[in-house]
Amino acid sequence: MAILKFRVYLEEDESVYRDVVIRHSQSFQDLHESILKAYEFDNKHKATFFRSNDHWLRGREISLEKYDKEYKAPPLIMSETTIGSEIRDPNQRFIYLYDFNKNWSFLLELINVSKEENPKISYPSTIRTEGIAPSQYGTKGLLGPKFADIEEKYDLTQAGEGFSEKDEEGEDLGIPDDEVTLEGESAEEEI
Image (cartoon, rainbow, N blue to C red; front, side):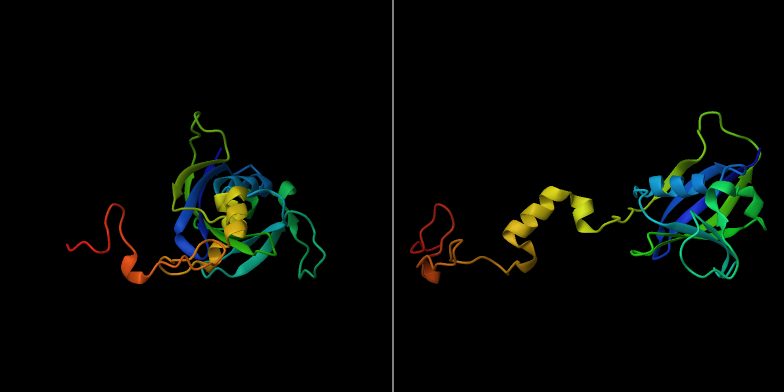
């Protein structure tokens, strides 16, 4: 049984990629789920693959389901299509789109074909991780809901430069600039 190794690049940054191994007899749905797992994305959005050539031009579509849009040719369905059936050359490429609103785009390139299965690996599997994956939903997803609450409470987006001699309500504390001191020192002391 052939084992296919794909390098899955983030389209915007080729230094961020995951190497995924999968059996040629497994479906595109299995590949779809392994890519999402490798990049720590959820599985809540629409997705599609396109068979591609060396110039990354989109060919035949392999979709999660048939969507309400016009197709030049009806798409293949991921759960019904094996990966091996869509391999046309030894360096086969695919384009994978996920979440059509955020438009996550990944480039897949077949980088190795092996006849030997590794008994220690359950296929499909991520065998190499390079670079930090982007957060699927932006800063809030990356830092968690507690940071979002702090950011809203203290409005961290409007951070000013340096320090101020005003308290939290904006009242001037009445400290003249020449009397501002370091802890344990007096402004009058000569250094």
